[in-house]
Image 1 (tube, rainbow, N blue to C red):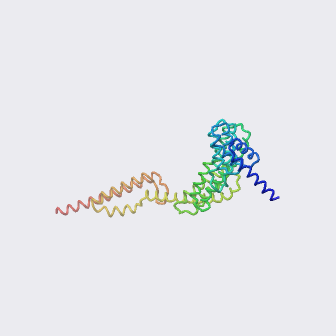
Image 2: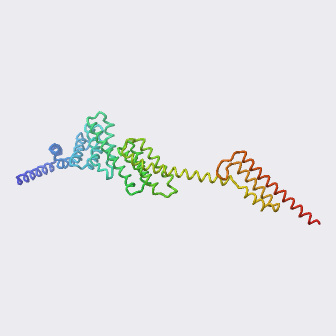
Image 3: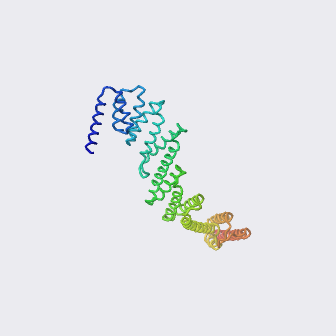
Length: 357
């Protein structure tokens, strides 16, 4: 049996060689068609390549180019078939083979589309080519299967984009992960990985805030809260809600504590600005009232006290003073300052009188 198969193959090669050596190009052309129908694509391609220059510009030119590209396509050489079909659709816009050529051109990219982990340039080309085919032939009998293939290609693009963004999360670069996931959501808002990405955005914000310096935690916990509410609004029934609830509770507790501390600090600051103990004023008056220069300095001090009192009326214990108490306090301070000023003037007059004597 083996010997018989070898003999048949040898005879076939011998026959093809005789045909190819013929000066009759039509015989070679017809042999190519015969071999193509017999699915002997490699031998058929040899025939078509040989006669192509001879039939350039003739009615057979489009048939030869179409079948030559089809041979490459059927042998799985989609790069070569893509070049052939692209040349065909540009060169023979009125050929009866045009629709089939454009479909096989698009399908070649589809078959070259790799797994999501690899570069998806061919997938993008396939999606564009198939969409162009549908736009040109909206009533094609291949419409449904073409749409199904487009959806398959879109899924690969969704998977690729998600995996690329998730690399940042996996290496714990949470700040970049948030940016990457948001970019994917902007580009593919209908991705079936949307829930996964919104979840990982929320968790990335939490982990980033949890491990941050104290000066950065408030803003980052606030960002986590925003992401949490976005997730909950879109996926209220998600199984991940319980996990995110714990993170949200921690963030909420931190922000509440921070706000309480901030309010206390603000109240203390207002108290320091508005309240000046009367004893401190009296001691300063006693020290500065010994000279005219001290009197002028004391006047300026009183003016500052009055301006502060007019802005904020706060007692030493932090409580808000009624207006009447504030007015009485200002009157007492003015009265004491006037007394010190009179005392200073009397002292100066006595000194001048002694000098004249």
